Amino acid sequence: MRGDIPSKKKIPFTIKDPFLQYLKKVGRVIELPIQYDDLTRMTTSVALLDAEGNDTLWETAYYTPSDTRELNSALTQIYAFLKTDGDLGVLEHLKVARIDYCTFGNTKPFRVRIINGLNDNYDHFYVKKADASRLYGLELEDLLSPNKITYLMDGATLIEEHVAGIPGDDFMDRNLDDTPFNKIRIVKEFIKFNERCFVRLLGDMRAYNYVVDITPDIEGSQFRIRAIDFDQQSYEGRKSFYLPQYFKENNPIIFLGMGHMSPRTMTQYQLEERSLIAARIKRSRKRIDQLMRVMVQDTISDDRKVKQLKEELAYHHKTNTFLDCSNMGEIVLNNIQLLLAKDFKQSILIS
Image 1 (tube, rainbow, N blue to C red):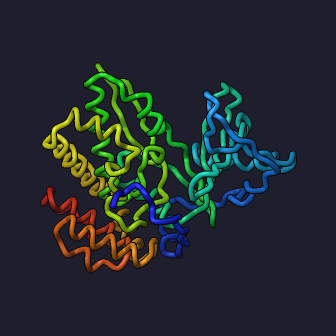
Image 2: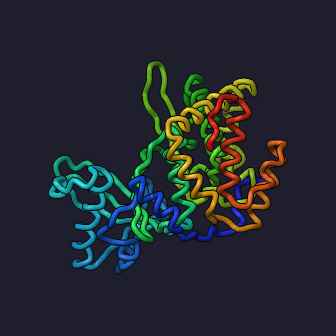
Image 3: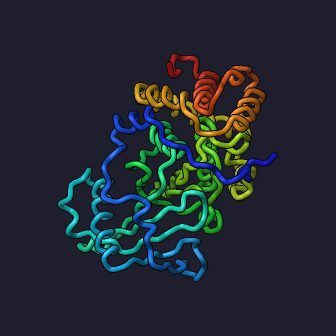
């Protein structure tokens, strides 16, 4: 079965007290001046079109004058929490330029555009509904990927920073016609991204759920693929759902790899990424241990999906260790341990 179709709409999972205490300990919980539901009091909304007149699936929200004043004050404070560790001295130069509402997907997020009055520069952040699996996904991204990510939560509300980059689908439409050197670098990064997703079991990485950050470099460019949707952290039961290579939306890069990369080279890049993940675990071992101790006691999927995934991973890895897992947290922990242990015999496993 292909990995490109979720079984059905994902259900949210409550953030239980052990996970909440972990989030407080690592500084992710803060008292926010408004909640997600406050943004739903819009009076009307208008479809947001891109520069070419296409529907973006976002709508610009409008509020009453009194709500607009309240939201401007609260949202600029939240931006200060995200960017300046709560230094409110920057607020006099900030204002909310626009609030957009996404009608697509499970999370129904709001995207807030903040303008700096001193230079007209703008930035964004997102207001979403907090969900346990999404928060596990954010934590694992911060700890196991090369990318640090800032987010805050309060009750049922999640605040996420904007991850800059070209949306994956736009990147494939406009940026793949490049030099042979850059094409190899693009494929290399996708192989590494594919490995990172599979190790920590982040699913549904179709092209519109990640961005590509391009950095000019000597005689070419460097590429970094960054996930922007963590809704499907270890939720689905199909192994292929956690391998971006199986989504048809990613086929342009897959075909690029077939023309520019040998299987031996692909394996080399997989091993390189596993080595980097191992190094990240060693640097953050105490925190990862704390997170996994909470996760293996939590529920972020249903029994049927857990059963399917552990059986498929047991077959894939040719080991029965997965068959003893009783929840997704245990499966994630086993997958991390096994994938690292296969090629790195030193003592790097989570205790």
